[in-house]
Length: 324
Image (cartoon, rainbow, N blue to C red; front, side, top):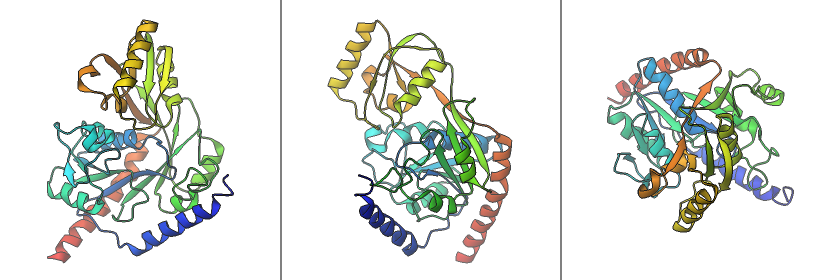
């Protein structure tokens, strides 16, 4: 099947290259950090973006986020508020809003202009957008899943990739391999892939877990990772139920889940991302596994960021002076 779809994949790559070559990227008035991946599926971009925002805040910065708002109806640019719903903004934007100002915008240039004009942030973190050529990126992190890697190495639809690994690596300033937990080492092939680029290992770890018997469900790209994290945190999985990524919960889904919970005499539990998509009237009855992303060397990560952000701030000041 991959061979049959090869010509379409080649066309996809050609269109992507032409789009990138035809666009002159906009230099924002402040530093831009991009968190992305080469694959179609989720790798942990949102948790890593939140990790970066925490490190930046600890060093005296005011980080803000720019996201496309995947799964939401809002095209933007618009700043996320407490009154917005996931149907408007997407679940990832609502999660990010707990950690700083968030602009949802399909037009990334317009979103960057809005964020810096508001003066609510002095550093912009792009959650996704690695393949989007509309902004100059001062630091780009390429995230790779330790288990799935780059799949069969082919571009969509022949494989799971948005672009070839080498094309992505050429625009990356660091590679982050996301492992299942803290004890898993970086696979040798991914370490070799990173080559001379700074290489980090990151993983999700539970926060304030309350172990017990549960019925787990989720609508994310890799359900098995969620269930494994639950078990490592001490939970006993009485039953599990998978849904498509970014699934919009329907009444029938919720009835089925509640019946399953009653059958096993166990509470329902889901991810933070899934929880924000649940109807308000049942959220309190569903537990969440709160997680945060950790990195093997946060000090080295800070050392990578500091000089690049300083250079970007200087470039932004120069550009603003020139425009006057």
